[in-house]
Length: 406
Image (tube, rainbow, N blue to C red; front, top):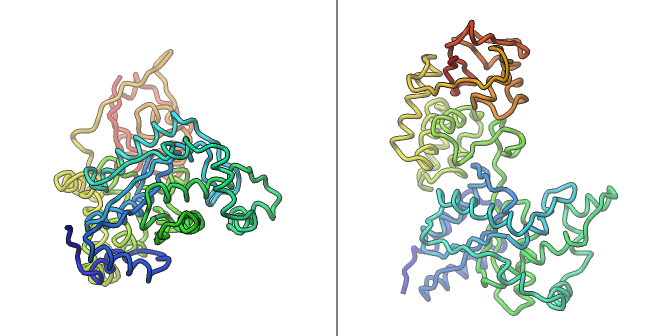
């Protein structure tokens, strides 16, 4: 029989950084029953296979699942390969394009590989909801749909907004919350985790479990983490994100760029810092934001890359940003030209892998973040004659360098 920490101790960790626990008294009852029987609780997290590249915002809910693992409970990660073909409308102002089953499987595998940087891989059960949803007949779907009403569906904020604005709502979108709820029935979830934008879907899981004669799950919602700008939610499309698979040097430097007001929030939501240490870190972040932010950057980089890499990332930042030195180990790049020896600056930055696109390169030039051999470049239309100029060092942003050769 498994032994679990006292319920009060478990609650201290579970409540950390949560937005809502619905209902809290049922969570306490489940924890007490689990501790008395030695049976771990089944904690469910559904992963969205339309977003295979994870960042710290995605990791907030993964960290909560890891906390449950550390307390001795069972983590079940549901890859929505079937529901991915429907597309979750949560927080959406229009219909999301559906994915093929093959795409959802590929993205799901990538998601799990990255999520394993947070979760205990050996203690995570991964399942695909096509196992049970794909086996349902049309009659099964109709019977499932009978357990709720259109009025209840249209009460959901995003549906209500779209309906009021005469935006189209696909009938299949109304099935998504039901399908996600059926996942909870299939694994007999005790608890389901999700972002605040998932509240409706999580509550639907409670209703469908109850209709199926099961004990309804407790719903725990987690806040949406702000990105580097400190305003919008962390998002790759907004370019304000910190990817959990990013290079240690980039991760360390990006953490240092967050506003001081977010230091404690990142400690609470995005790190494995002991819950008992959070009050002192809150005081430190207010009194000594610079030093505390460096500590935060080191903690986050260490979590995803190890202590040695975090130490090297800190040294790299001090050398290249604080002392403005050029690293010794920067990669060399020989541009590919179709004719002659001239190349546009934006094309050069993208070819050298310093920017993802010419658009990003142009933004960096406008921001004054591009230099050639230490001289800032202000002209995004600059054309460089490599035969004349190379070799030289090009820098984009604070941490990206390339030695251009010809």
